[in-house]
Length: 191
Length: 274
Ligand SMILES: [Zn+2]
Image (cartoon, chains in turn green, purple):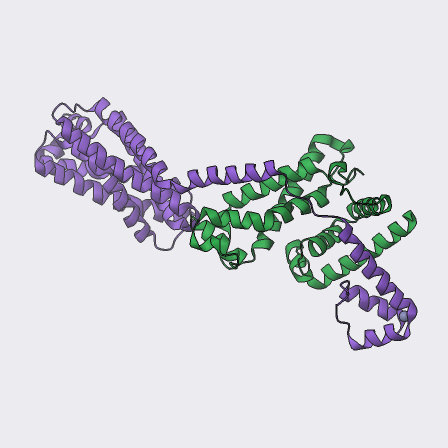
C-alpha cells in the first residue's frame, strides 16, 4: 500500500487526487470512508435494499470512470452526492418510462423497513416507532427529506447539504425545520 | 418579540441540535414563553427521534463487487500506452498492406521492411497515445492529432486508388502533362507529387474535423502538417527504395511543404467560413 492512502488524516480531496494519479489504494480508503454512508443514504432515500445496492455500486463505478473530471481542491462529498442524485434522477426517469402512468416510484411503496435487519434487542414499541419514523420520512417532500437525510445521517452541515442540493444554507435550514414539523404532525396522528 | 416572530426565527435557524446557540432576543422570548419553548423542545425531540433509524452494514457482496470492479477499471485505465501500441501496430500493418498491394516491394530487403514497419508502429502509437492522453485535458492537441490521423487515412485511400509512382508514370505519358514533366528533374517531379499527395488529405482533414477555432491557424497548420509529414515518412521510404536518394529527398520535402501548407489552408478555411 502506498504512503498517501495509509494515512487516515488525508482529506477526501487529497485521496481523490492520489487516486487520479494512479494510487489504487487511495480509492479503497475513500470507499471505506464513504461507502457505508452512501449505501445507507440510498437505503433511506429509496427504501429498497436491492436498488440501494445497485445504485451504490453504480455510484462508485462512476467515481472511477469520471475520476479525471474531479477538480483538485474541490469538495469530494459534494461531487460524490452529485453523482448519487444524478443516478437517483435517472432511476426515477427509467421507472417512469417503464411503468407509464401506473409506475410505482421510489417512495410510493410503504415497505421501507427491511425485516431482516431489525435489531434483536428492540422492544415492540421501539420497533413500531422506528417503522413509523421511516415511513413518515420517506413521505416527506423530496428536498425536505434530502436535507434531513444529509444533515442527520450523513453528518453534513446545512451549508454543505445546501451546496449539494443547489440551494442556499438558509433554504436548507428552513426545509429541515419544515420537515421536522411535518414529521411531528404525522407522528402525533399515529400515536 | 412576538410568538409569530419567534416561530419565524426558529424556522430560519433550525436550531435542532440541543447545543445550537440561539440569538439573544430569541433566547429571551423562549425564557418567558412556555408555548414557544415547548415548540422548540418538541422539534428537537423529533430530530433526536430520527436517530432510531439505525445504520446498516454494507452487504459483503457489494463491497467485494465494487473492489473487484475498481481493480478491473484501474487495469484498463492504467495502460493507455499498451492500448496505443496495439492500435499503432494495427495501423502500421494496415498501412504497409495497403502500400504493398499497389507498389512492388521486391526491392526492399526483409530487414528493411521490418525496420520501416517498426518506425511506423512507433509513430502511429505516439499519435494514438497523444490523442487519448489529450482528450481530457488538452483539447487543442486532441483536435490536432485527430486531424493528422484522419489525414493519414485519406492518404492511404489516395495511395490505394492511385499510388504516387503510378500517377507519375501516367502523367509523364499523358500529352497535357508530359511537356511539363519532361522539363523538370525526376526529384522535382516527386517533390511536386509528394506535395499534392500530402497537402490534399491534410487540407481536407483540417477543414472537416471539428474542433475549436483558433486564431493562430498558421501555427495549427504547421504543427499538424509536421506531424503528418513525419507519419508519411515510412511510406515514402518504402516506395522510394528503387530510386535515387535525390528522389527520396524530393518526395519528403514535397510532403513536408504540402502537409504544412495544406494544414494551414484547411484550418484557415474552416476558421474563415465558420
Ligand atoms: Zn412565544
